[in-house]
Image (cartoon, rainbow, N blue to C red; front, side, top):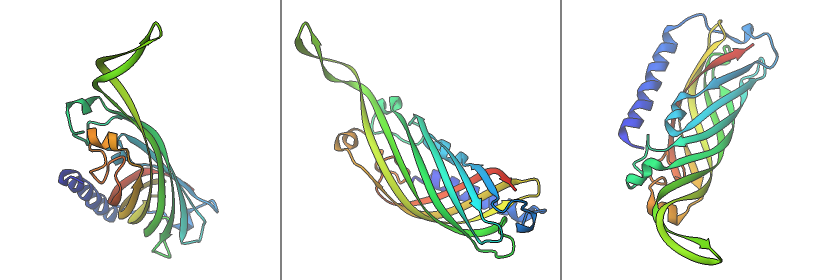
Length: 227
């Protein structure tokens, strides 16, 4: 990951943790009216990588554990975080979807709606990267195949899976507003395409769509608790 992006993640995490520590009137298990309190949250940092991500968390009341399901919608131009290898990368487009499953173990036995936690999990993604540029391509006219030079578009399918472990802090106020900050590490495995990698460098940064290897995670969730 490049240094500015990593620095942004760390700064946001520290800022949010400091904010958590200074605010009062938090919610505990005693405030939960349902036996299966739910929370819904949004992760804005994913927008930097063309991804909209929502998390739904279900915790069994009086238990120190919770389960998280996530949905990702990936769509947009890739030029924000990538140099792409050449000027044509400004025309690249990515689209796809992902799902995530995670287990959350609350580390504070008395205040589980507001607690430090450890969360292992797994994410799956399927997407397509569209590259536009100038190249030779074939077309047919009157039953004869011709080759010409002009603008082309090629789509490359990418599938990936990642396992991870995060440490974080989840806080719910009596207003039902929640904030969640986390840091962690994982390992990502992606399908590769040598033609795509010859033209672009999406496999190189640890946030890359078809990166394979150990990766760093950091994020902030904003949402609300359904008690």
